[in-house]
Length: 55
Image 1 (cartoon, rainbow, N blue to C red):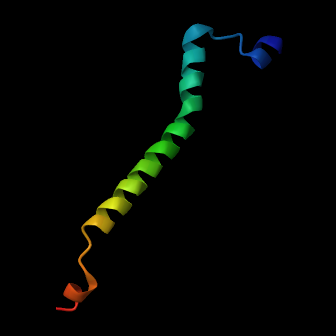
Image 2 (tube, one colour):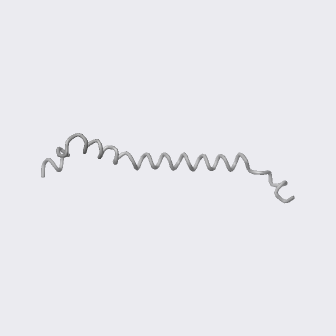
């Protein structure tokens, strides 16, 4: 159980794979924030003034 506990199995390719999989939640969070911010910025920048919407 010691190699399993400390991650000393599978060699370097498996450790690289686990590292990449461990970084994906952070990457998803950052990309989601960027997509949200860009959408918010685009709608605020190109929104029509309220007085022109009634016409």
